[in-house]
Length: 96
Image (cartoon, rainbow, N blue to C red):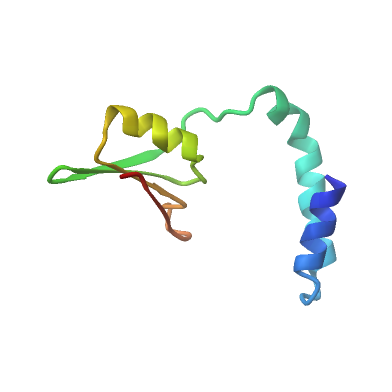
């Protein structure tokens, strides 16, 4: 975690509150780190689904891993996976 903290400080050194923000981040991560190592999944994650003609779209609020999209595409070849789709940004992963 020290490497991540150093990288975050270096990348954001131009911001006056960077050190305090990264220290707050570290404290939050330290509280939950062991839990996420033993339970690296989330329950009850909201998904959005839409179909336009033959194109199928599935959207979720986090960052989907490529492996998730590829597994979904095995069942639904015309699938478009969208991450960060909860109104706070948008990232498209196209599998075709």
